[in-house]
Length: 162
Image 1 (tube, one colour):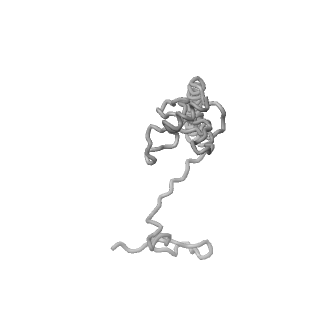
Image 2 (spheres, one colour):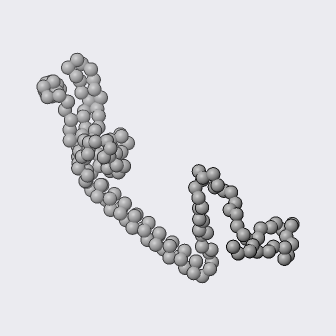
Image 3 (cartoon, helix red, strand yellow):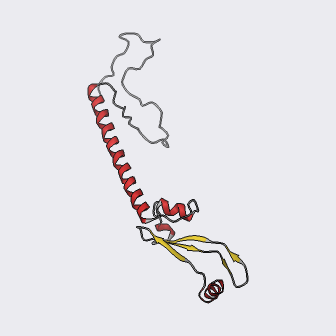
């Protein structure tokens, strides 16, 4: 068989075996260890032919985690269809549980705000931009300003209206 395989490799190039396809349409191949016509040994490889071959269109999650583990050699056998379906249902189940927990948490938080058990978070208003020269400097106002040590009752007189 090795002579026939060698003849095929020399004639048609590298032999790669189709292992599977995921639900995105990516195709996964296994290239067995081979000898070139010069006698050099090319080690076995695992590869994927992506549906979107351009790099800028690739998004994280375009390759399922089971196939990614097989490509990187973290598992010996490629994933079966049953395993992929089971894991997909499990992920959807976990996402549903997470949504339920978030909804319960928001309802409990709203109830605590209504009953006054928890103070609502303070809303901060940013005035100006940090790059502005006047950022962080006190604004001039007509409001009385004093400290505890120098305050004299009745010492402040409002400014006359213009």
